[in-house]
Image 1: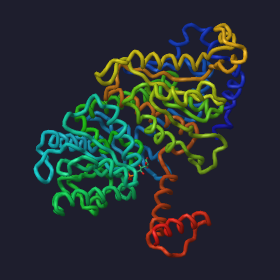
Image 2: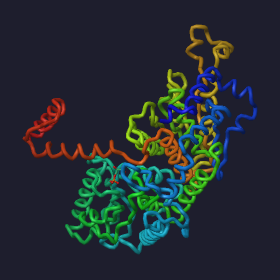
Image 3: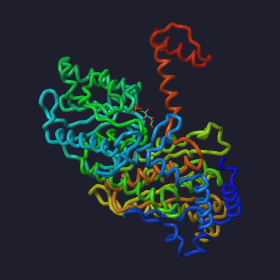
Length: 539
Ligand code: G6Q
């Protein structure tokens, strides 16, 4: 295993040796540090100088990556090897953004041709909806699109819809329903007109309990509004899925289905047909621009040497923190309100991918894997949990994201926003010594309280503006960062048996809630909870 290699040992020794070196020292020793540890990729500026690293650590991390065979694994992914070994599938989300005319045949499928056929189908549909050529059952133009999906069929398009608020089509609003809690559907339907509403049922498998329950209720809501006329369904429901049979069984004409393939993992699917709601609420051109951003980052990841490769370096720094410095979490802090769902999106991407404890050859890992990913947009977090980042006992590496320009022309608070962003990263890195606090005239009893240890590492990611292209770059950056870590840890980042377990367990219990009384065979706690619920409903 990777932890028994000399390269792992070398990192362990380095981490030990560098324990006493502060970021203050590192910056004082080398005035070119910011320049040396920053990389620009197609307009994205990534400053890694406030990390607890130096050239030796970077070199040792690259050695570790080479030992883990990272370069071969990258090629395996891009060329369609079945790297999702537990499901015997290729992992080809990078092919979703290949330019038209590219060549890639995997398992007999001409991938770019199929991808662009679906993209053209989506663009044609969007054109018809936006122009009013496609209308609802009563001839009215579509004004609201409701995406019904969960997990990978919700988080990506929802995050991107909010991120690209400056690029929205003026006539179309999108809403997103994921939770099976009826309140979520109720909220999504509040105030909208069934005659001008299009439902998009987004489900790779078309078997997910939450999504089918929400879609069934949405169907009833629509039918109630049109006097039960089933022919209305064809004008108000489309599906995004790999399961044509399931779509047809639900009553959606497969002519109104936008397909994708089993080699697109749910959490890697926002740039597939799963992004239809985003394309409808923006435009095919904006969607294409986003795909170009993804592809630009893919190309960088596939071709840049590891020591200059942003997703590889960020992934490796994350491994360094997780395994050699014992930092268990990563905070993602966009100074951009439009990215308010970005941390939640990354939470799934990273934690569902690398929340694993079994290696590719079936053994229990003897080291930590996936970190806990969390975050909120700045500056809100500053007035809440940043306290723990500044002065808590466990260092929390942070990824800051900011833009030179605001994403929408509104009241101009941008200087204030960015001043906070830069100030936080600076304060976290350099802290405030007790002597500095004393020099401010603070009374002795409060000096320790007002001292900041510093040495809290962060990445600073800056771009000119949150455009569709930049959004694509950012998402691809984190997809590949996640992949790199999975390769080092030797786990399959592309299955999700824990999620599958949840789906099966809920299906078993739902019958027991409604069809009781029956013999319950759970533990005594679960049995009692089911009984109490039944008793409350007198079943
Ligand atoms: C993603 C996961 C999971 C999945 C949802 C929805 O990688 O597998 O979040 O996206 O469970 O699944 P369906 O799209 O099949 O409904």
